[in-house]
Image (tube, rainbow, N blue to C red; front, top):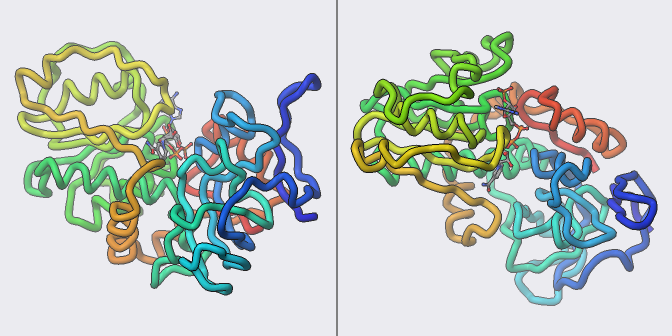
Length: 325
Ligand code: NDP
């Protein structure tokens, strides 16, 4: 038996509770991990609350990120005692995840805990920080350079947004932060934002082609916000789109793409190749200072995970949440 958050769905409805669960709930896998830390991402909030059909197998232990120590591995890829990291691959959605003391996984999903990070620091970054890095890499691939102008980050106080600001600033970009919590301006400026924008200015229907303002953007919000952001990108610029915190629709026109050569680069972290993951984590180790992690992340015990996950969806959580298992 071990302690875990368990999501169940049956005739009594959809519910999440902290429970002692039997190892038999764990799926098949060639590696067993004693989990030390996990996190709460937006997707974990959706899974725990049941607000979106993220979980597709029941009972389910949520948690799309985890760090822990290998206790058994039959594939030969890892030794007992190795510290490993997992982000995504459907874990916490269709395969039991990190919000429990034990996880059974496929060894091809794991990478060694990146050198330079403690387990708690790797989880302070988690899928949010790793996705922010992938977004920055997508802008770099499209040729967006610091000297081209300001880069906009939407959903700035969220996990992805906070890391996108810190990473872009560290790389020398001038960063504008769009947020519904302008009272958090000091936090956003400390991360590296030089301009704060009220997100309400981007959430109403705008013109197909707006004023050319941004050299690039990292968008975590989607919907009308993403449409407006695309319409404000300078000639030849790019938007890395990874999120749907404001909605999954995209009420846009083709005008920015066909008249200004704007690129809309989609970013997925879940099924990303191991090579891209290693590259992103290597860059994160180079770029993220411990002091940034201290200002972005708070740590909670597993006992508080369900309540905090619900608060995250209500926009009450700033930055990142590390869960100590
Ligand atoms: P968080 O909950 O930490 O942050 C989301 C932020 O979005 C909030 O803090 C808020 O920022 C803003 N926001 C929330 N609701 C709205 C709204 N209705 N309209 C406009 N802005 C809103 O989530 P994460 O940072 O973990 O994830 C952000 C998004 O990215 C999510 O949609 C998530 O699903 C997606 N994601 C996608 C990944 C991928 O692989 N493609 C990987 C990771 C995340 P503020 O208060 O500053 O306005």
